[in-house]
Length: 272
Image (cartoon, rainbow, N blue to C red; front, side, top):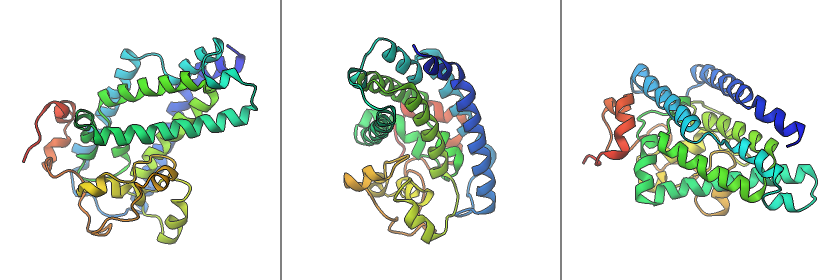
């Protein structure tokens, strides 16, 4: 293991926590200044549930799957595992391609969580939020986080992704997930151009529509290109951004955002 990989492995928690807290604070402030629309639910109930499930998911990942993607990358590098460790390529190429591959994998994974019924039961908790703000970007069930972690570790080892690219991807993905779930209004002209390079809050808002054909679109978290290339891009909700309904038809009670309800939701039947 080279010194750079070792340093990244040592500093990973500080770098990720610092980037997370900084991004969260900035988006929270911007949401207050430039909201897309007023929130309809109790902030206390939603935030306690969303932040609570995020903490549980983080703890579950650390306790049950301690081999994080960055650690997996350093092990793969040390043992010359994976595609990129078989060739002598310039560092910037392996870093850039690794980030692109990991982003495509997350897109495919996201589609799978919508299309496979048992995976949808786990993922639907994220979509059951009746409002959309930065905390929705943290609202993922521990089972989904663990499954995603296993997939990422497998891909990292298979392609031999450099540790720096994995850490960069993890930080970028976390930041863009908070950004594109934010209740943050961007001028339409700016949004129209920005969504060619990153998933914007308006673009991702379509994905949280109560209309299932709209829910099953705009799967990207970071890069918007996969949706455009693979036919899942939708420019806007049919009802318009101001009139669209967020959430799922079967979970419309505010109490469903309590932490205890979020934990058990994958194991209960859908309500009519």
